[in-house]
Length: 180
Figure 1 (cartoon, rainbow, N blue to C red):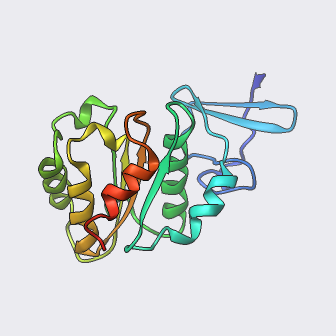
Figure 2 (cartoon, one colour; figure 1 turned 90 degrees about the vertical axis):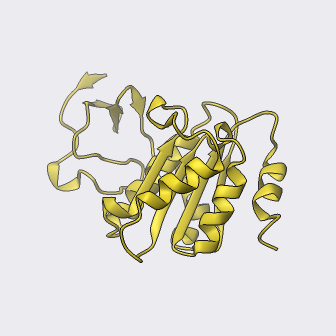
Figure 3 (cartoon, rainbow, N blue to C red; figure 1 turned 135 degrees about the vertical axis):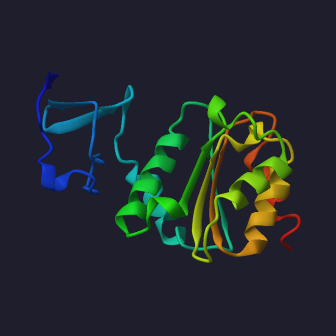
């Protein structure tokens, strides 16, 4: 693959049929009619099959959107792509809260109370906030925090998890137990 500027500036940071373009990609490569954007070592191909299934629920505050799968299967990529679509729809960065619990940046969040307090500390107004919690299983009793946020009713919540000890049914049961 040779490096070249295959993304015209007018299309950067826009959704296209098969790819996401970002304003400041690290490297652009073109190979066989496909443009790849390398962003911190990741190739960001658009995951339309999965996005199309969840797209209609982006702004739904009553449902908790769960993306579950094996480690390294692309859940974080899907979250990033949802965030980009939400931004393109006109939602500003101040109303997007994204926490990746694989990062040491969020290691101070140990349990449900820490998570709830941290997210609520980022809220500045009554508008809807889009909350993305990646690898949530690393937070003890995370279900309590998520349910607390859900009942506040100004959060659209997206969650990923990949713990082999917790199945998707157990995860959804824990999250809905207090809803019903």
